[in-house]
Image (cartoon, rainbow, N blue to C red):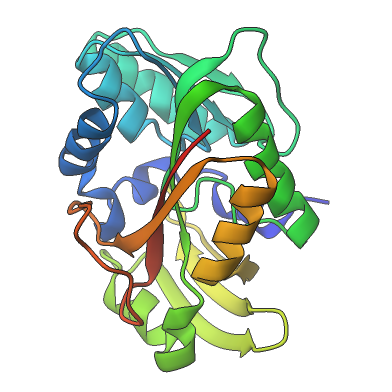
Length: 253
């Protein structure tokens, strides 16, 4: 049986690319480049690459990029975008909970809930972080974003989602945040690329900054910075607050 995230991203690639939170790609890649020192010899893996927006832009700038994702339709759109851009990106269908590569990478990115925090158990989410650590070289950089548990303690997730969608193709109908598990159980109604409406029951895990620190320390990352995350405006001086729906994590192995 397909999980909710598999149902969501089936035949949803074009609609996904229209979401407000996907419009800051250029500035986000500017930030990634700055973090890796503008060194185009660096090999990068994009975990949960979706439609390849970051991977294609990095390849356009001269980087060797591999993107992995679980969704066939998202990957098809990613390959189409790479072909249009005239760049070479290796896009592979792989589960973020179970993958490995013979050759390690210099950097890993996993942005906009690219797998992590979407899984149905904490153990699965942890395995994604563990796999990211395994594919990195010593000293490798890991940049990812995840859901910030401080946000739903102060705000309505449903209102946030409904205020940050376009074209009326996604609507949050119900939300219930569990204080014991830090999971948000929600019902979304989406309109896919064929104009078909479908209702999906979601289960997402929000994380506190201290949890992220503990998880990454247990995986032997040497430095960990947890920042506020703003679409298209990643920056080092953005302190995490209760107003940040996501947190931006920068860790070095």
